[in-house]
Image 1 (cartoon, one colour):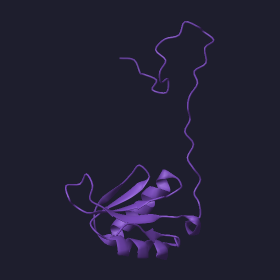
Image 2 (image 1 turned 180 degrees about the vertical axis):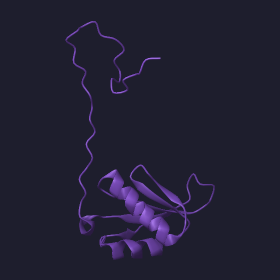
Image 3 (image 1 turned 60 degrees about the horizontal axis):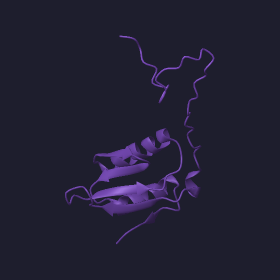
Length: 115
């Protein structure tokens, strides 16, 4: 079977030999300094069968930096979690601890959100 060029999204076939495929290159946002980040830390139970998770939202930067920050928080809290859709998800109610860890890391504009 031939290799499929997955970058040619939406184009099935072209008879024009001079046709140039246009690609949508997604650019990653440059990292903003930690002291300028406005992060919100909240507890969420929706779509999780009543189990609590700690969400960190509002991060602006590259996916690798977000993943690294998520790994740091999961390690310090000693629990599992994930990084999806620009959010850090930490299993359990660790809102106060996460806020302290983020402020310690230099994210001074971090705030608790919710009750």
